Image (cartoon, helix red, strand yellow):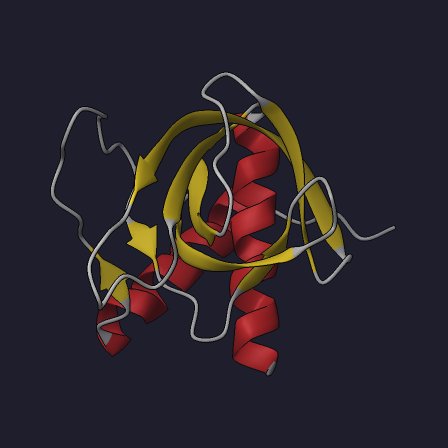
Length: 132
């Protein structure tokens, strides 16, 4: 089995995203932003119940997605991208969205429970997007 240097892959993807202007720098609210956020063009994530949700953004440490139903802070969920790669995450918050331009009733913010695997999850997600 081939050994991959996930940190090196992440740095390569980060540089490509910077050159292409694809890194989304989000304003810090209550959470600390340690890692850049990436937008996925047509990103969908399957959450525990296997219902697809639109990805808001993705980083090494977590992911945010839109939902038609609320999630509870502290809730443990399993996310997968196209059933190719999965990761365990904890719901950090669920924000109610309102207004005619709201893409969904809720925005769910999650933190990956394994930071090393979060790096792998992000690299695979970005590679999948590049291949689509």
